[in-house]
Image (cartoon, rainbow, N blue to C red; front, side, top):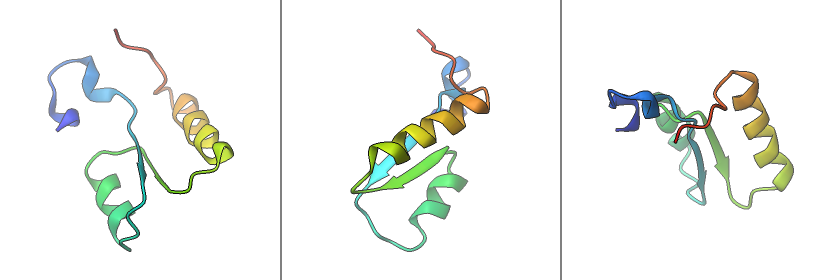
Length: 64
């Protein structure tokens, strides 16, 4: 689980892109530490908006 890592990578932003249409998938992913869940087909505007929200929260730092 990425959020359990002891290093800075535990805070990497995670965006899930899925074709799964399970009703509770979004809630499950968010509970597991995913930052954003997008469902296919994904409009580029939706992806850019998700990235923008993560950057606005200060989660846009690049880690080597």
